[in-house]
Length: 83
Length: 83
Image: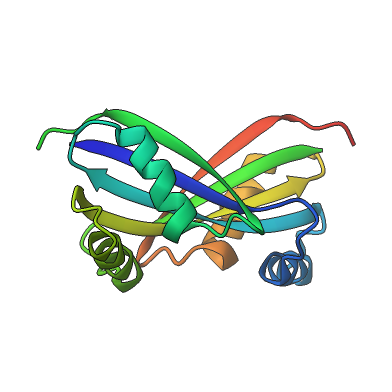
């Protein structure tokens, strides 16, 4: 069993209204030092080990997890978890 | 200017319907090896340097960014970014 983390972030230049709202709320709470906030997703998968695991995860990202038009993703495979 | 990453994940035991839906969709696409999927958030902040930066970020998390009842968070301060 492997633990896989997929970090999905919006590409540079893509508007992030959720991040903007967070930044404005932080300012309203007195945290004026926050210049920018951007929101991304993190998906943690528990995957059974098998051949081509990295290639298959990349496929999953392209087909379902991320939208490659507006999002970047980064895959991190962690050490085996006891199954 | 510092770049701060806040990773927010659901606590163990808290149901994650979005993760369940992702796992079922991956199975439907033929990725049977995915045993579990859980979805979290990642918030990237650009913060002006100042005193007590870590303590202030922790406050922001508790007050606005995360829901400490059902979510855990982890703060990572990255090296200074050129401002």
